[in-house]
Length: 309
Length: 307
View 1 (cartoon, rainbow over the protein chains, first blue to last red):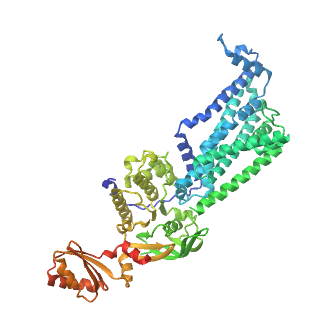
View 2: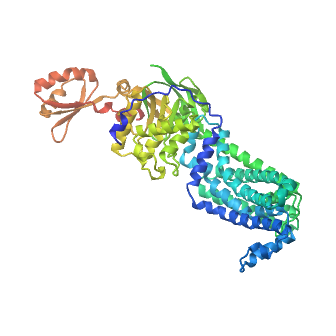
């Protein structure tokens, strides 16, 4: 330590501080900035990017074919047009609604959403407690609600990006490739559904990972706990549904419930490879129950963090 | 001097464990050391003063405020916990600026203050580095920077010297002196007594969650009249001095060191001893080179109190 650095005269602050009403904002912005410092976890977005390209291309193909283009022509003048492009073009010519593509993307990315939420959310609360950072938070003019909201925003931003961005890109492709932007006029409501579902998806996953993080002592345990919770409930639901021959057991898994809710919001009846034959009301109730449990845990544990600081 | 901390019947329980037990204490402004062995209740008391935890019984007011969850109060205190509390991915500057923003400063103001605070604690050169690469001393200074950056009236510091090398300890002590010189009151805890002795003579001694003693160390020592006071003298003619000192009626014992160069004695009345020593030293031509009251140190006082 340099002696010269200690010669400054101490000057007590005499100004006026702004009441920090939105103190969750610095927590959220700083948390996101810190999370983005590590680049390689962003690879978790690669599946979302690939799915977006595939489903976006199908939507583009659909509108192109509707305007008279042949599947073979989709590949352009290149004589060695890939068989895949022709196949996608043929698929697109047979189906499909844009909402099917959005739901397809959401279904395909379900597991990756869990990985994302686990990676970015697992350490948010438990690491604060482990290193004692909560002592610094709670010696500031910061309410518990702002603390939790700030943490929720951090993980929420990453999950939201994994759902909202692919859906919006597919919608943008649909809007720009539909003749005279007719998609926007005819099915513009899909954008609202995208926003609604993205919020539900984000809120459920972020709440669950925060609850698990408040319970864990270290990030790695919260990470394993989060992935384990989603996989276990999903597999258990599938197994019981199979053994009992009753699809309602699927509602045990939050991921299955989110899929069911997505299908309901977008008005999709079936998605290839996924069971959706149970009452959507059951899924809404199951998600409400899970959220209630998660927030009870969060509130109790964070209050305990404060009182046992 | 005005009172900054006033605790009345203050208790804090952690389930069946008693962290602090019926503590009534009044702390004046200035630098005050909070002392006691591990588990004495120092950190619990500091957290109660910092508003981190709620009292189980009794009450505490600091700067006239009830501290727990009091946002108005939080703007007036700086808390430097014992725990690491740093985010390894943040730079020192980001860390301090982030916490300042939570205190209500604008981004620009927070950055400017963070830079100034980090310069004050000697982290000017390392403020752009991630805290993950900081040494223990640098981490301690970064924590201290966040505690002083918003110009608090009271600085609460939990075990600041823990794990620091002697050079860093001296620098930290110097820094505390400067902060205190600027009119900031400091409440500092430690279980290493001589660390606090270098900072202040005003101490609060805790033991097993209870108040053991409070006040300037020499005064506390003076109250312990049932214990004889110990004095050590180095002299050229220590042997003659020892035999003369034995003749004083208030001197209980005299011991000559093995090298014959110093005398350790115990006396019932230290004041009389100081007044009679010049005469005895002159008569014996002892050539006194140094003298020290060895049990006026905090360590000795603490030993007496808990024994």
